Length: 478
Image 1 (cartoon, rainbow, N blue to C red):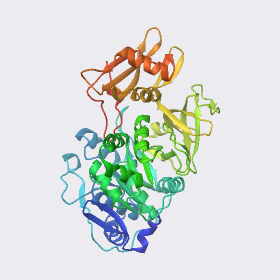
Image 2 (image 1 turned 180 degrees about the vertical axis):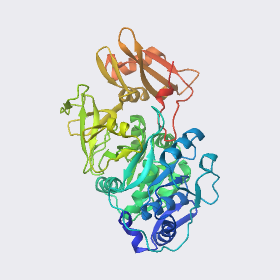
Image 3 (image 1 turned 135 degrees about the vertical axis):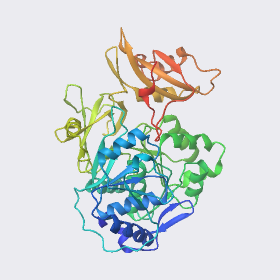
Image 4 (image 1 turned 180 degrees about the horizontal axis):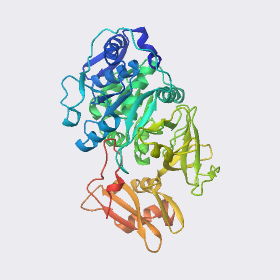
């Protein structure tokens, strides 16, 4: 619907999209996306080969203008998973860049090449706020990926709530290098600036040099994941131009996983800028954020966004009302920002809700001001040891504070005495001289509490991660 992007109606010469040397103004984007929207109008659903390119941005805008639900496809998805997504979502066509080579799993679909020039004709009627905008597939860690159906209302609601929390305006220029097949990179990173009437500059591929160049050249906001911010933090000591560029940014935002406290502190010490964290999911879009006018605290994902209701639920199903920073419960949310269903999975949809509250599966505590600190996933990060409920996240942050630790992940494993014991998976700074198990256990016990210390430590060359830098804990097995 056209009012997702009011700035497109003006067809102005304001900058809208830039990918390297390729760029479109709002007028040019309106023409290119509008002409494609006319071509695909009336389709039941289309897939989008979501490469980090100008074509992907034009394709998603065109589908939304046409009122056609779009299924972003990760180009790195394997054939089996891709075949499942195509069979499940049943798109009638795939939108792709003219030069893209598509896999066999898409061979049966009509291919529509995405133009970057064109003249818009009359657009289809607005399908209404509850009509599907996107079908975004989850990572499928507990079975085949499920397609979360995101209505147009959810997209508008979450982007407008972020406008409020971050004071996001048409004057902002967003810099990022995130993949464009999911919520963070595509909805927040492409649709967000376009809804505000601002500009997005996509690096194509993340690099420290690219971030420094674009922020120094007028960028006001940076979106990244912890892996990216870690690399920026590592480079700050020897790169004064990067330091200056980050210091000049209005807003640095990290998401998709927790940013270690150590990297927060290094970036702030070098630049005077604090990184803001926010919390969201495919099914919920954005739930909370540190507000731009609040004091950021490392480890906090802030307060519920405008229009979001959030509660913590204990294992017995009762609501946790204490804002004591200690009582751990599962986050449940409700509001207009939620998905409507898992496509073709009424059973999974029903299981995901407690009444009209969505069960996130994330465990958290709330501090005295109502802000949220996530301690991990219910399935992988809540460790029940010796009668205590322990969140893996706080132990990981404590381990990362040790000078001999480069990366850390914490899991639980069965223990005949404790029920579960805490296991630390460590990538040391010096593989030839790693810290001892006793040293790391004592380090955690001194910072947190004795019952939270690792009972076993395992050293790795690298932690397994997905495309967004999230640690794949299910791959960490003895």
